[in-house]
Image (tube, rainbow, N blue to C red; front, side, top):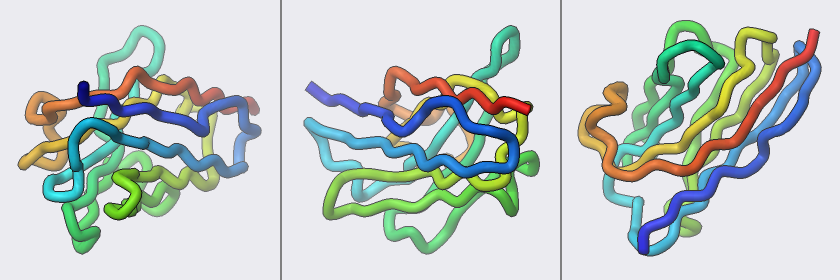
Length: 122
């Protein structure tokens, strides 16, 4: 059974930092693009960040570029989203996604986590 589990969400004050983790099991996610998406209440799911298999190339939504950093640890079958200088508009459920060949298109990802809530207070 393939499983992706997010952790690290919670309540954080505007301007603060948070690190999300996605730990995968049941399948190696070391050979494909992995990423993060988010969905705010009443809005559609949107792309946040993605990273290639070797960590050599990263992709970011314009809204988070310069503030968020995606990374991965293939030995642990895990990838991360470091969120710095967070804003209230970053409030959303964050989902990790794995095994894509198209970094920014959520429809191309084969596996998804259940999501973790991030709430940014002002």
